[in-house]
Structure formats: C-alpha cells, structure tokens
Length: 301
Length: 291
Image (cartoon, rainbow over all chains, first blue to last red; front, side):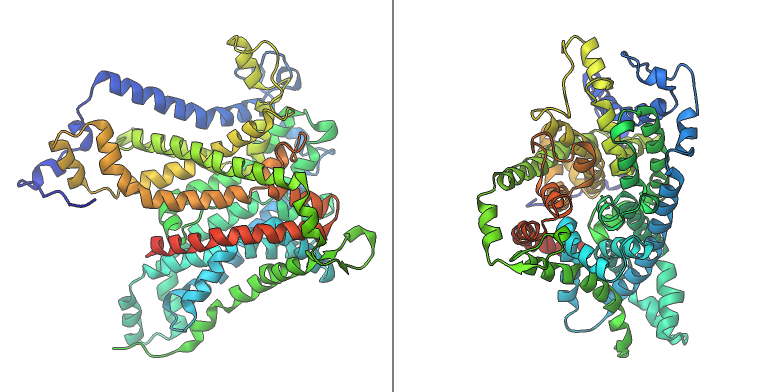
C-alpha cells in the first residue's frame, strides 16, 4: 500500500451503516457464495457426522455393503463394549486425562514465570534466550525421542506418569513461554507502578496484579498445552511399554489393529469419546485463540 | 521514575531453561554423538565409534531419498491446498453477521478433533471395502471397482494428505479471518467509491494485508507438517512400499523397530541441519509478528 485513501468528507455516513446493506448483491453472486460455503460446511462436518452416527449403529448395519445414512436401529452397544473386558479403554482415558491435565497445570505455571521474566526482565541475554527457547519448538521430536528414551531408561522414568508429563511439559514450554510473554506484554507497566506505590512487593505484584489480569492468557495457554498433550502419539508410544499405562492415542492404535482392525463401530465410539474433551477445551478458548496465536504465534497442532 | 532493580525475577526463566536443557538440549548433543556410532539397542553390545560411515550409508540409501521426497510432497502439497481453501472460506464468510456468524465457528471444528481420531476417521471413510467414499463413488457411477485408497502406493499419499488438509484448513481460515478484520474500513470504502470490482478489491486491497500473517502461518504449518507423525503412522505406518514414509516415519522405524539408533541419529543430524535454515526465518518472522 503506497497511499492511504483520503477520508470521505462525511465521516459518519458510511461507517455507521451495516456492511451487509451496502453490498451490491447480484443473485448469481449470492448463489456462488452459498454453494461454496455449503460445500465448506459439508467438508467440515460430514466426517464428524459419519463418526457419531457409525458409533450408534449395530455391527450388522456398520458392515452393510451399502452404508446407511443414519442409524436405523440406535444402539449404545459400541460404547458398552469399550468399558467391557476386552479393552482397557477406561485406563487409557484415565492415563490421558491425568497426564494431560497435570502437564497443562505445570506448563502454565512454568511458562508464566518464564513469560514474566522475558517480558519484564532487564538481563542482558534476554532477547537471545527468548529466541533459543522459541527455536527449540521446531526441533523434530522423533529425532530427540531416541536419546530421550536412553536417558529415561537410565533414570527409571520409562513407563511412568512422571516421564510422560515431563515430555509433554517440555514440548509445550517454548510455545507457552512465548504465549505468556505476549499476554504479559499487554499488561500496562503503569499498573505495576501503581501497585508498587500501594506497597505491594514484587511477588504481590506478580500474583495479585499481573497474573489475574492475564487470566484469559493462562487459560488459553493451558488449553493449548492440554490439546498438544492429548494429541501426542509419539511420546507415549515410545516412552511407555505396558498397555495398562498407555494413553488414548497409542492405546487405541494398538487396540484397533489385527483382530479388531475392522471393528468400525467400536473404533468410532472410542473416537467420539476421545474427541469430547478436546472439543470442550477448544471451544472454551476459541474467543482468545487469535490473540493467543499472535502472541505466541504458534499453532497447537 | 526508573523501576528499582530487583533482579530475582530475571531468574524466573530458569526452570524453563533447565527442563529444556534436560529434555531437548542433551538429546541433541547425544544425537550428534550417536550418529558417529554403531549402536543397536537390543543387541546388548556397547556403542562403537564408526566415524562417518552412517553418513555414507545414508547417501546410498534409496529409502532415505524417497522419504525426503515424500516429506516435501506431504509438507508443501498439503499447505498449498489448505491455504487456498482457508482463504476462500475466509473471504466468503467475511461479512456474515447475526446468526450467520456461527458458520465461522462450525468451519473451525475439524481443528478440535484429536489427530488419532482424524486418522481413524479417514481410515474408515477411505476403507477399500466398507468405506463410504467408495460407496458414494460407486453410486455416482464414477468407479466400477473399489479403489484401494490406503493400500495402493498410488493413492496412499493423496489420501493421507487429504486427512492432513482437513485438519489444517481451520488454522488458515482463522488466521485469514482475523487478518481481514485488520483491513481498514475507510480503504475498503474508498475502493468501493472508485467502483473497484470484486477481484481487484480482493487482489489489490485485501491481499496485501493478508500477506504478512499468511507467511507466518505457512511457516508454522510447514514445520508442523515436517514433524507430523501421528496421522501418517496411524493411517499407513509409512506403507505401502514406503510410499508414505516421510523422514519422521523413517527415523521412528529405524530407532524403534530396527533399534538402529546410530543410523537413525545420522538422519536426525542431517534433518537438524535442514531445519536450522528454517529456524532462522522462523524466529525472525515471529519476532516481527509479535512486535
């Protein structure tokens, strides 16, 4: 953009009118938009619809040559079997919930401290340290997990919650620290000055003034860490050997291979239950997502 | 008034550094050492130094070169398609207000689906026998015999990429939707007064505002795809015939199926060097963005 357009002489006229009424609508344009947006909605929702409906069909209906569009006979059978004898689904679920939640809480705490230091600190290598921390996020986990396995073997962290939580936390820290730095940067320093005048010490300022103001930031960071941990397949697959200790991704992968490879109904029921916590986390922070992303500038995939 | 020096909070970054040094710093150093050794974990034999022979083996390893090619196809192919779909949807839903705005929320949902579930979903929908995609194509008369989506070396990569695109579109959609709000209203208004058509409005007025965020978003997604393990492993395990074996999958197989840590580390080192080039761009772009 070379030149900014000059303002119109009547500044209040166009701005106050809702944008939609100002659009010159041609019917064919509206039709094209409607078709493409509908296709977009279908593309986003059809797989999810298919997952939910399949999980509610009985085995006979699932394996029919011509799939039915909706379950003709609703059944909760697939869900019941998940909690039966054959699959340790409830222990997968428990392991996932415990490790992801604990990792989220720990990572948020450590990230908040790091973010405060990176935002307000006056030490000399601050910028450089921040860059190094950020750069570690792009390292391929799969390259690091080999040596990590050897360390965990020696320190007896294999097959433990501690090892998994440490892995998840370290994976989330670079992103979390930058995200928190972004949120803390947005807190005006004047507020801290005012609190100091009111007699607060450094710790008081941090815990009673700064962190409460970044509450959305803390939640957003936590939700991102939780989503990362919930999605992680590589760490539990390599750092956990016993099936009982597995989290959902590797546990389900092991369960639905071989004999149960084509138990689509059970697979989709497990998929539904695995999705619910992540959806809850995602939509809880959806409003803050853009700010979180630009602050930390990194996706939680 | 200058703030009083109270240096203790400078050290609050320390836990982060300690953890990263233990879980990321040390493994990097170890990777470099292992790459010059012959170390098969299960053999019970100690690691022995072999100089650069792992790197020589790598140079003559056709699977390595193929996995490098696959990584490039998977990474850049999915990003290009996802950017186009995400941009189109963002532009088309830009002015939706009132109850229509929930369309934007719905378009974000694939992001909230766990990666393992995405893999399962696409495995089921693209199953050669009971998959709904083959059934649909049969009904429409487009195919006469079932396509072996995930079990043929022709179709496995496109199918895995499609699953990846499905999860990536919401990310670009969100980035573009957010950036569109930063286009100043008076600029759009002035262009409208000048009777700018739909395409010149998009191309000359809006796209310049989207370029910066788009570059950062693409870079983030390239790195994510580069390191993507869950989707590919859960869908094809790199098969059939190495057609979906990316670098991640190959390194994983070498380290944890063949337990050949030395050779896996050599590939890891080459990979780290490639990533360093990316890292320089990445950090610079992100710093510009967070300013």
